[in-house]
Length: 89
Image (cartoon, rainbow, N blue to C red; front, side):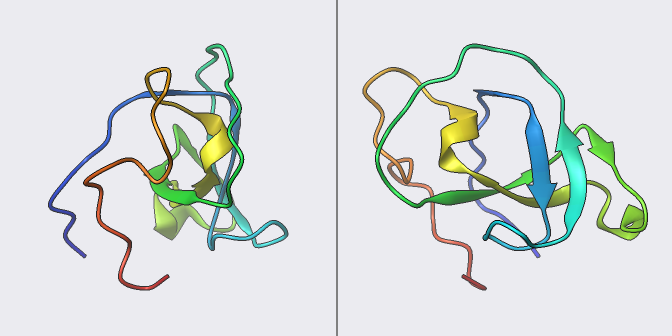
């Protein structure tokens, strides 16, 4: 899978899941601690966690996190402008 655009920003700590819904298997964990922000939508981002978790080591920490964990610049709308939708969602 190739991604033509990356979005680099801070995040709140949390689980990285194999699919973009709560209750899907946890494949990794994002551990960086920064200040949270809030919006009002259902966007998830495909991301790489800081740690890969068993029994999903083959995912190498890749998975999805809800937009509420992404600390984009103040006033940014989600999904982030110009970032393409993942083809499998």
